[in-house]
Length: 437
Image 1 (cartoon, rainbow, N blue to C red):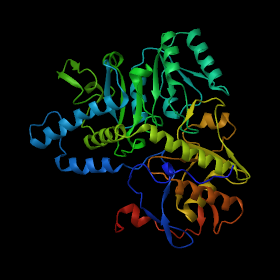
Image 2 (cartoon, rainbow, N blue to C red):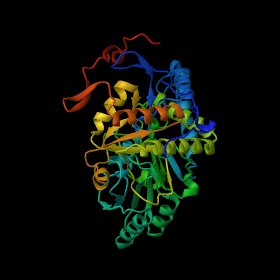
Image 3 (cartoon, rainbow, N blue to C red):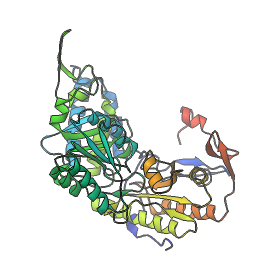
Image 4 (cartoon, rainbow, N blue to C red):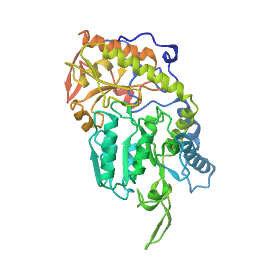
């Protein structure tokens, strides 16, 4: 089906984000407004987030042990941020918020706390596939129903401490039935960890209602790209485990003979924390919590369907899916085109149309291999700053490529696809020497 006119609800973005008016050069000359379809990798900052960072920046100082006014302000901002995260994810009373660098950091932290085996699916992002000790991998089926049956069989066959699953696939956007998985895990004597990197920015998550024991997500995917992430979870494992980092702030008392470690969250937050990053993450949580998420979900689903339908109508374009019965999908549309390498497609979109997508294997090599695309694909991901005009630009650009109407030549240099010749400049912008416009 060819994409048709969108309803007013998706014509304009739902929120103002950084870079929304960014002008980028084109290889054929001139420039255009950048169309960002790479939200799943790193989302741009919400205006409320950049405003909060600018507000707090003059007060930036060491936290927890400073008597100065700026230190007190920074400490209060840092600790209040835990409350924002707790409210945003509906944390239960026995769950604690630990600040980290990103989702990968959170999952590696938890991996050192798990007192037993961890069960995962073979379709996980590397961050939720590689860190676990005593890891047992279950092969996903072509349906969610059969995949769940296989997980239950594995959990019942041999005791496991933890089931670690993605909330939404970073390759296809498909969402697993988390509440059902949590109930099954608990019935089998295991706890459940949800990698919420792709889920948290797009869907309401309530840990108490879902029955989820641990959740990890990143600020840079939650419209707060300032280097902070979070692990929310039950306190007992976190209190009993060895500190993630040994150092100042993680202790109650130190002598040359003995160390008394603090409980979580301080136990796993040694060193000077990323105060501004944490404040940015909290601001994003507060801003997203204030949105009408029914409207957010409707906006995203409408745009994703518009994009998927428009691409499917082009000869040679193939959309990637994991399951035939996934209950929901976030705004990710991943595809291949006959006769074109993923990197070639991405280079064309950027160079001639000012469109940013992601190409490759998305840190999910086993997943791409099992669905028959071991060499990679192209991922277009949507967010709060996406409008229907952006979607239509992407569809039109792909149609132009397939119709043989690219106006530039492309080739590989050092293994990467680039326009030949490259006429756009990057050095001034990357170094900060360019004048802001």
